[in-house]
Image (cartoon, rainbow, N blue to C red; front, side):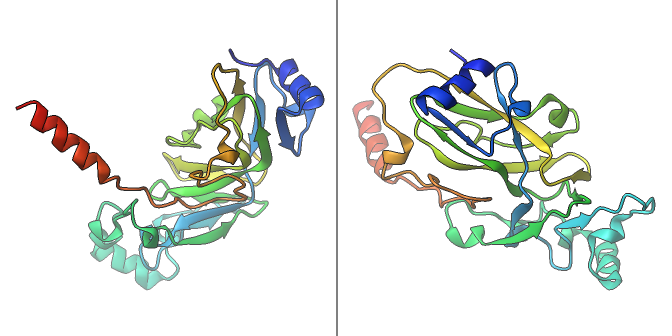
Length: 240
């Protein structure tokens, strides 16, 4: 059962089940709380073609943006025109191996107050301004309607949180078009649901990767559980 806005406020004030820092009542909705984009993004270094900018500082007075703006130097732009495959993120040279920690080395990008233009070809890790704690409830985040209608995706598969999660929320951001984002813009909403069953809080689980995270947090290497091969082998043997 989903909590209403007044119940979210009550759980903050009376039980401590919900912590949101900073909190402003103007961001409390009928059944959610609005979350904001912090001023730092990260990208995986390995996924950025050499010579290309990860993002472009937005100048609202300009009307002459072009593909050349994605490059640090004109010679690199001319090289892109001659050899576009070198800069195409579908090129396997930009392969991202989710099980290899070396692929998760990052670089920081600061979002200026005037805004930052994001590229449709790059995945960005952002984070919420808000630090949250959730106890005895199930939290999850999603995009706001206006964010979605600008074709900004603020999470891929990590919109679901856990009872006991404490930290900032890392956002996996993609855009459909070159799109301007600003620090402290509303980027999503957090919801809370009640649940049944014995608790197994995230912050008490030794296998938890991201509890206490602050700012955009790169992926932990995804385990390859080879013990499953033994189970599959036994199942296949029984079936013969």
